[in-house]
Length: 232
Ligand SMILES: [Zn+2]
Image 1 (spheres, helix red, strand yellow):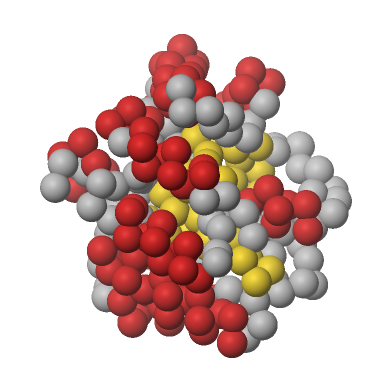
Image 2 (cartoon, rainbow, N blue to C red):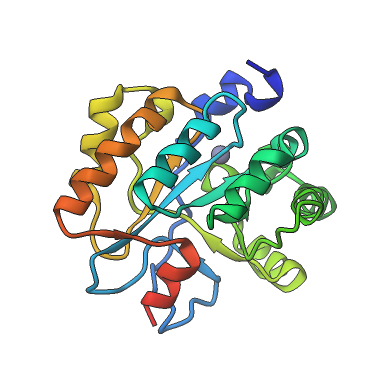
């Protein structure tokens, strides 16, 4: 297993422990002044599966195979160091129709950084994605941590909207395949953005059951762009 694909344990332990920034959740029909989405207002049974922190040489290929077999497209918020280490996996994800978003270069807490350092974190990942032909439209800040001032200037500078989530099974705590599956299925609702991490084996193993059980409830799976459009 390449260490390039792993975040330090301390970072992973902290990942998602910081709740999303407080603020109203609004669909695209009423554009949010902070350019941020936690879910999309819709009555349609549609959700977006999102996978953070990869691509992982160990787990992402298996996930891509599962998604291909299931005919599901998802959104990957990738860490730039992993993009640079595994550009082939990013190319494959894009070729399979998945959406790619920026999740910073090295997964820091952006509120702790200077504006210049934030710019470098986002620019380096954008450049690594551009090298494989991908231009991301969205940023997911690591840990969901982002200041309101950063939302304003990052949107102006990069054009990104900011994608958070409303379903979080805390898969990084490794509660097991059945628990991850149950938490996602129990909490998904129309317009949900589901937070998962394709750097954990159990998460990838849970994906077929998540897809099957949500489909049994009538849900369809969209990329983030498609989900936002569905809210219009
Ligand atoms: Zn992350």
